[in-house]
Image (cartoon, rainbow, N blue to C red):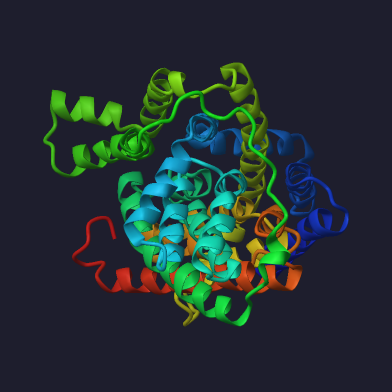
Length: 447
């Protein structure tokens, strides 16, 4: 099978994937595995070779990120249980002041969503939304937009959050530089989509306090002892700092013992393992929840992400082995559309259709990532464009949509205007930043 028939099979396989997840309500992990098998059969692979192809794609994907995802979930769970997340939020809001508190909440979202998954982070910080609405008189819609967009931008663009971590791995990007450029794109995207758009939409939609008066669920297992702001920030930046050591070793340190030590400590798996160990030891006085319970909850939430990630790799392996990738490279090289725009659109379509930023990031980067060299584009720029596409257009098929709706105390139309459109504005802004970075690719390292 070749040419346009390959593209047709590719499109039909995606349509079938959407149908299974959206219409039949089949779990994404099962859907991806089923579609991977069916697609390989349609493409003409020998039946006896298909299991090996799919398991190899599954395993090779998890080689780079499986341990990281598990450690990242545990790390976030520890920070949340210790009260460190709330301390970070309070500190940022003090810097920005009450009247500019939506901007502070956006920046808080960027910081918090690096170690903590979106749903958990929004629930943890949702109490601030209500209290700030009462203190300032600013519409709750502005605060929900600011917080939600800040969280989803970081969740989609800044490693070591699992999605962008997988993108960096699949595109072959140097992780330290990917984090730096991700931050450069994420901050303007959050300010425009979260703060500026949030304030504008908040002026149009201002629910009365009676509409948001219902209390949020009380948190259980409050910290035994109040953690300091300094320690909270120190733990938050520790894994990022350690990972950046690997970049320093590669760019500025000559070969030798120092480079070896920095490279080892800065390895993403080692860096996060060190951070988890430090957090376990340092946070013990502040956590009242039994550690066994925290580990169990973390493994439960991280396990499905690992399965979906591996299944996305299995599906991508079938697509790449079929020759679809090579044909797409040849076809796209004759198009006038920029590659970064192409992968942005692809990622955006998957994000809106499947309702999962992580699935969109895994699927897009698995299929498009290996093409970066052939298309003559920097892997980092391609990866950032993929991440930008996964930010916006969260629809009711996304669990995050209902988290924002429930804990933000908004109606469904308000949630769409604040969260779905706000995220889209942020994603387009991030894409603009990627284009801007590409203009300076000749003088910026790694681009």
